[in-house]
Length: 82
Picture 1: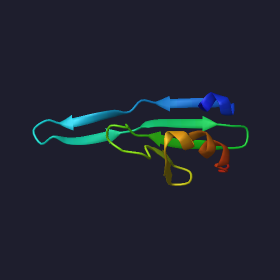
Picture 2: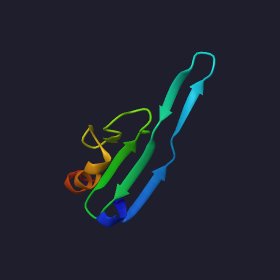
Picture 3: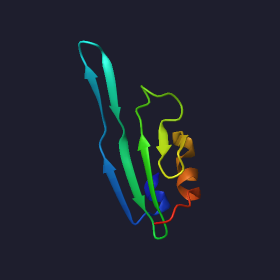
């Protein structure tokens, strides 16, 4: 989906879920995407569907969450500058 918006570069950092066994406390480190276009740079995080229902994407530029079906719309309408 992201490639259809024709970015100049795309950087993806893997996430993970860490569990502290004795207490069963989880730490969620999201997948981080940094997408660079000619006129803007968009950063967003993706959280696992199993842990966060519905809006599992979070746009760091606009501080708004969205779901997978809104991904392309969000990439096209974010107007952050460098």
